[in-house]
Image (cartoon, rainbow, N blue to C red; front, side, top):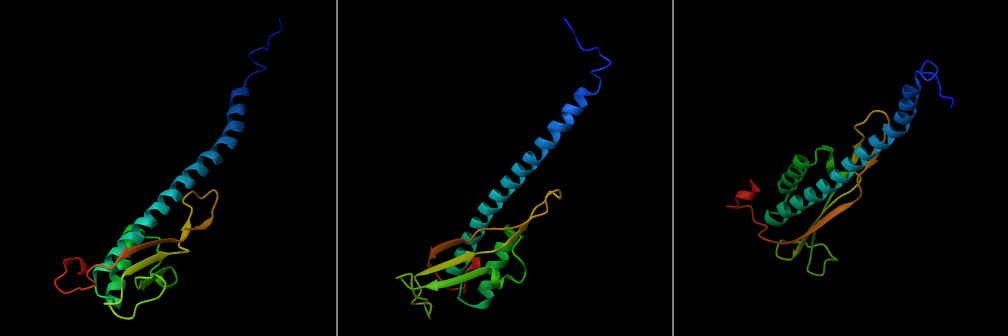
Length: 152
């Protein structure tokens, strides 16, 4: 029986490890980024829920919009400070197709978040991904900020 002498087999394990590492590490890092992206997608959904709740409870004005977006940014810091192209707030009548003009006409509030950039954390593959569009529709509640602790 011929066996390879120990001296001739030196370093084989190191070469096998290096080859395996080159294949395994990108898959491992990709799985981490995929999990992080899925987590951020769920966080974006929660952020729109909180934004819709804030808009549904408080007066329909710019202060309320800023409050809602600040609450959304507290949960999802990836929302840029110039949020106007990323956050869409729509107040709708009961048919959900037309925008309402006064508080008494409003029946629903929709907050949508779209195109939020999410850079990868792992520097090996620098990608700039964007979150898919996420929206939440909430029924109108008070829409009054006076004596409403949620709106302050």
